[in-house]
Amino acid sequence: MTSARWLLRIARPEMWRLVAAAVLGSLALGCSIGLMATSGWLISRAAGQPPVLYLTVAIVAVRAFGIGRGALRYAERLVGHDAAFRVLARTRVQAWLDLDRAAPAGLGKLRSGDVLANLVGDVEAVQDLLVRAILPIAVALITGTATVVLLGALLPAAGAVLLIGLLIAGVAAPVVTLSVAGRAERRLAPARAALANPVHELLTGAPDLIAYGAAEAVLGRIAVHDRRLTSLARRSAIGAGAGSAVGGIALALTVVGELLVGIQALRAGQLAGVQLAVLALTPLAAFELTTALPTAVRHLVRGLRAVDRLRALERLPAPSVAWGNKDVIGHTLKILGADARWPGAPRPTVQDISLCLQPGRRIAVVGESGAGKSTLIAALAGFLATERGAVTYGGIPLDELDENAFRRQVVVCAQDDHLFDSTIRNNLLVGKPDATDVELMDALHQARLGAWVDRQPHGLETTVGERAGQLSGGERQRLALARALLADPAVLLLDEPTAHLDEPTAAELTRDILAATRGRATLLVTHRRTDLDELDEVIVLADGKVLRRGPIAVVG
Image (cartoon, rainbow, N blue to C red; front, top):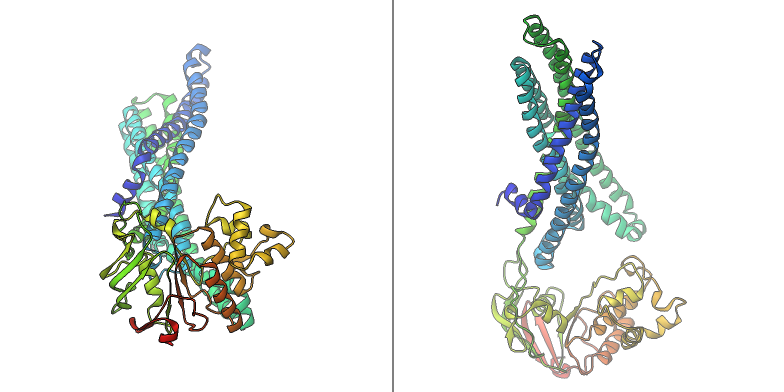
């Protein structure tokens, strides 16, 4: 799919609004040209002091063109921006859906700055592509053609001069802009993304960077990227200025040319004296349509580059399960003889693995880093499609189930679950938006965090800070666990909930997790082999394969 076809697909529902905006813009610009031409004729005719009735039509026309120009310009901006904002919303939703479809396994090397550039910069560039590139070009073509035809009807030579002038300003000026700034425009979006990455690192990791004395290095990288972005923006501005200069020169030459052919026609008796002002003044208004073209070309190049980046999101691999539409009929989660790998991995990260999570059954998966524990969680949660074997829930393969129905039954609590810079209440409500305060506190008490919340002056309204920076590591994990428990899933998948915690805190949290999950199907992925006596089975993974399995007393 080409960039043009992609843009047409996104903008098609708003096509009538965009066409209406182009028509209104053409009429508004036509009123400006008509106002200038009629005013020139009126001034010249009035200089001869004819009876006022001879001027009535021109006077009314001047008023009509003046009022129409403002009203039509307002209508064009209203309709055009309404269409652009609708397309912007659709584009941003589509970009989010593409990222969601690929997440988490298919995002590959995309970093936070890249994603931010996609969702903000590129989407807004598509909006500018419509209202600052395509619409001005369409209006210029429509109005320019009509003006040349009408002026040519008055005096063919004058129409030819105007056509040449408009072509110079409308074609040569954008070409100059592209030759000077085209490469810079194509590099602006990647440069912004490159700058966004270290800025995001600095903002999110400032305490650690300062503590280790690494902040200056990150600031240095930011300065390098900023200088490069500034250089590209300067080159782009120089290109726009060069294009505007060409347009200004073309306007001056066109006015002089119109006067020359007009004077010659006047001497030959081919033109009335009052019409000479029409020839001289019409280009002043007509060239309004070309002044926006150098900028329009810049936005065109920038917008098409953004379209290419957004199209790339659609081509991201989607390693997750291709979901169906069946409803859930049981609550047993199984994986049978399955292989699974992350995109780009040379071989399956887990191989020939099987386990069964029946209601009330609790299993621990232990192993060193890289053993395949997180890959197993991803396969069970449908984030990774298996290459061999199958994952079923309630006896139905995941690719036949409705995703939303499955997500309501199976919840993943990851070691790095995101906690929003908001209150404890709002973070918990992500798990169950309609939960009451009683339900919130019950979930917190199950996670052994209720007493701590009760001691806070603001209770549930206590803010947790960015990335839950105002909470300790154990408190963060307990809050994430409380959110998962609040969702009341049939199956709970816990991925390294004790990671990065000291041994006493990890042991205490493990005991609390086991107490909170009694009677609930639970898979606990951990690197710890202690405090697992209550679990029904412990599976030891090594290099993606089951090394041993059984009670902890047997596995050791």
